[in-house]
Each structure stands twice: as C-alpha cells, then as structure tokens.
Length: 536
Image 1: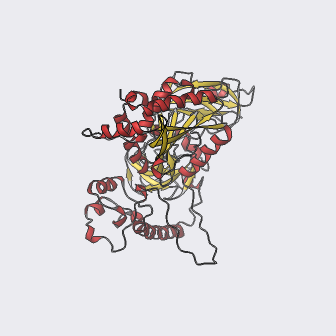
Image 2 (image 1 turned 90 degrees about the horizontal axis):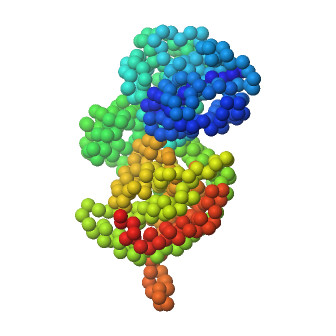
C-alpha cells in the first residue's frame, strides 16, 4: 500500500524547504532509515530519512525546487503499484512520515476520532532537530484553559541536542495536554490540542490516550500529581537539580546575578516566574548550604556514603543528549575504520607568542584557539582530510568548518565554527567562548551544531597528556589535543628544558590514507611551532 510523504518540517520555524539533492531515484528500493534527500531549511541543510520500506514510485519536488511544508514530496509503495489516484488528489491510505505539519498531524494524532471539530488544531511532538526521534517536555509555559496566540511559546522541549522553546502556530485556547512535564514521547505523539474555548475534544484525545469516563477521579489524581510535582520542584530548587523557571525569569535572574536554586517559585508546579525573581532578596534565601550550579561545571556528583557490606545501586534515566551521543559514537566506531597518528609539538614559540598577543589591550587567546587556527590552515593544504565518506563517493568540502568539542553536564556537544579558515585567532577565541558558554546553558541551536568538516577535542586543561577520540561523523578525522608538558628535550645537541604537547589524529581509513594523515600533522606542527605564520 503506497505511502505519501510530504515536505517535512525540519526546524521549528521552517515554512518551506528546498530539495538540495535526491540520494535515491525513482524506481530505487528504499529501506526504513535510508536517507531520501538533503533538504535545505531556513537554518541548515539536513538529511531526511525514510520511515517506510518499499520502492520510490514518485518524486514530487525535483532537485533545486522550493516547496512549502506539507506539499507532496514523494510516494513510496510496492513496485508497479498504481498511484494515479494519489497523484490526482486522492487521499493517501497511510499517514505521511512523522512531521509537525498541520494537515498530517491531525489524522495521525486523532486516529480514534471520525472528525476534527472546526477550528481545532492537533499538535504532535515536533521534530526540532534532524536527528531527533523523541523529546522530553521540560516545562509547559501554558496550562489547560489558557489563551494562546500564534507565536506564543507553548513549552520547552528537550531534544537530543538542546532544550528548545516550541512556539504555537495557532491561536485559540489550550484544550488538552497530552504529555506532562518530565515525560518523554516519540516524535508525532499527541502533544496538545488548541481550539475555541469550551470545545469538546474528548473524541480526539481518546484516540491516543485513555477515555474520560472517570473524569472526576482523574482530575483529583491530576491535582495530586501537581502537588507532588510542586513539592519535588521546591526540593530540586535547593538541591542543585533541575530548576523550573520561565525564560523571562531566567533572563532577569541572570542580569541580576541571582542564584535560581535559592528562589521559591509561586507559579504552577512550583515554577519560578518573573515576580518571584523581582521580589527575591538574598536574605529571603533559606539558610541551607548554597547549591552548586550544575550548568557551570561538568564535574560528577559526589557519591553518597554507603555502609560497608551493603550493596545498592541507582538507575538514572538517560537524557536525550546521552542517548544521541551513544548512538552516534557507536555508529562511528563500528562503521569507520579508525587509525591513529601521534606527534609531539615544540610549544616554546607558541607560549612566547601567546604571551605577546595577550599583552595587547582587549586581547585574549588560548592555546586551543591556536590549534584550531592551525588546523584550519592545514586543512586548506590537505583537502583529503576535509572530506566525508559516502558509499558511492567521497565528498570534498570546499568550506572549512571546525567543530570544537565542549563538555556539558549531560555529556558532550560539538558547536561548529563556520568558515574557520576565514577567521583570525582573536575571532576564533571570541566565537569559541560564546559557543561554549551557550552550550553549557543549553542555548545552542541545531544549526550551530551541524555542518562541521573537522573536529578538535582538547583535554589538556585536565592534565591529560595523550588520548584518542572517536571520529565525529560525517567528518573524516578528529584531533585530540593533550596538555603542554615542561620536560627535558634535546635542542642543538644539548639537553635543555622545553615545553611540548602531544596531538593525536584519528582518521577514517576509507577517506584518509596513512601518508595523507602524516603529512597533515607535519603541516600542523609547522604552524604551531612557528605561530607567526598564523597571524595573518
């Protein structure tokens, strides 16, 4: 049975997309998970995968063409199947690939109803990043019964990459919430229903949840849950866990330097709102010990005391980010044949140059900035390293965009410096600091974490002298940077005190041969040992 696939909504603000490239052609066999096409959105060019198996029977949007969200993109079905009725405006027998689009979201979410009341809009869990498969509702900014205007922020949703604000595309009253705060659900599951006040939507929500026959007991239970949630929020506010706070309150607190863990929320479920921050004074804080702000440090929590001879354990739910890291790194390690090359770099000149540069007014660069700049220049001379592997071709990237691995409390993110080779060292420093700060605050957008052609991972600040990294696909290589170590070295036949740093290049042997990787490291070494060559 044929399945109609419409132009997906691949970002929260996407209204139309451009098919940059079809990776399959009409008549090709398609498996679930295969990449159908590369689609250019308002934020990035993303790969769009198939959620169905079969044969590609029809292509509705050719390469280079632009089409609005929800327009026919392709049809997948059995080989030789008659799809003329679908092409002539007939209704697809199977729902389209999971998206947030208006027309398709309605029947998918309301599978148990026969008709959607006029003016009612069914909203499903949106796909807020190209790799998102499920999301967690971190916070609802609207509650059932609230008026909603188009553009209002409905909720904060935690994806595999960041916590993002999700805005409403409709106006009306919030009639139903399908996923409570803290709950996780796959993309396309019923998230909320918006429509005219007083509209009966029991038929819609019954199609995907439970019936409302016991409404009174359910309301009582809901109130009990809310009370428990409020108590839990109050508890986390003083213990360093997640603090539920509105975006405006968070901004005001940041401007005033207020520790939100000491503020008592008066909003729904103990949520901190604007008035709580504005009325807060340090003397009003509880006398309990100050909490550690988890967003400012990636240090692990200290293990609580366990009596000798007693075995115990605790299961901590994996975050969306942790699951995404596990999936992508496992795929990289088991599909890309890694090999590693290590060199030791003389950093004496780099240390002297950095000291001179940082003596200038309003200037501050790190050794990592120098490494990133050297990588960008070396990649220009060795384009084979700036590639990506595909089964039928090797992609040579004309642009150089370096990802910089940043440790965050939930794991690791890789914000990207777009067109790094066009930046000087000072510009790299400013950009890296900004991206790293917003990464720890979970404020990066998906497009700021996509599009890298090479990656740098630095553990030198932790005293790690040498390590290897897993390639951040679709890159072909990643550089692991160790600490600068003062030790005896031989110069001009004499043993003197020197400063050296080991760097290790992990390469995908499918695209980067050993000699190519070695030549890249030689060039990188020349730049780092002669920093004056990088100051242009």
